[in-house]
Length: 242
Length: 160
Image 1 (cartoon, chains in turn green, blue):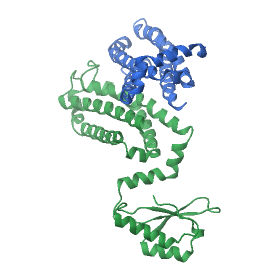
Image 2 (image 1 turned 60 degrees about the vertical axis):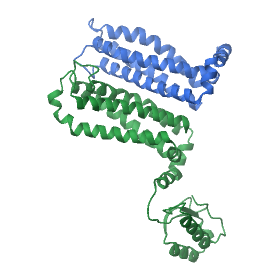
Image 3 (image 1 turned 30 degrees about the vertical axis):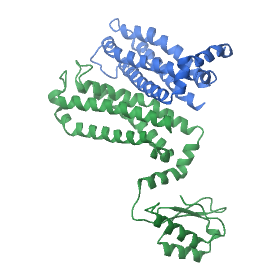
């Protein structure tokens, strides 16, 4: 993140040198550096020249215009890095506001944890039935269908609150190995669900009433169960070490 | 009342066990992980049981039968939660003593535990005698509210 320019700074010189330095050192290979500039402090011609030299564009104007208008510049680079995206999220106003809020953050976090009982706590019964461990005298569909609306509601709450938590703590997530482990397991859980729906579930009428479902369905159930345990564990560790 | 309890909380925190957990970063973190896994397992079971008592799921299977099949899972979840919860409490008893959220959690827990093993248990076992649906639903609702109260105030301890 570039330092904000002060009133009276030579905009052209400062921006050019900063961009050249960053490019030369490859510290910011994509140069998506954002500069906060007070336009009132900068002559319009100098601003235009800096834009031309650096091939940059004014991307955003924000702030209470009448008092201290702030213009943000983005210097386009060849690629966008993951770190850059995380940094961008972390620097947004909504992220900061959520992070520092007195009541919203605890409520979002509390909801995230409690909704686990509805999402994972309920989908686990379906997984256990798929694995052939419980409720064997009930058809698979009789276990899943009535649970589905509650499971889906639970996952919707978990997902929304989880995204908000990520949004507010993007840079801390970036540096946490538990976050990446959790993200990986979430992707795997999604793949597992997709594979299940596209393959073995297509033939569910054949084995719906079976006490022990076919091997592929059992594997899908156990994989889901294992992944959710891992996701909860990684999530809790992540929260502990943030 | 809380003032009089202070020496006991202090004593718990100063036991060797409390000291050991407090000193080891990983033990505390792992206890938190298993605490949350136990909660998910237990609350998940309570929810399914409540949905069954509301006749929303597993309608083909009797309430008593369902409860019997869920029992090993709910009790393992509860046991895991209680054991890890005790470990966590031991390591920071004095902090809990002065924490409003913990006071409410303790209250809800002291109500939820007896309710679980008296009211909820007798309702799930009295399947065949045909209790009026309103009694079954009310019992299920109270159990869910009590246990979720424990969970919510437990999470709140961190923020006070």
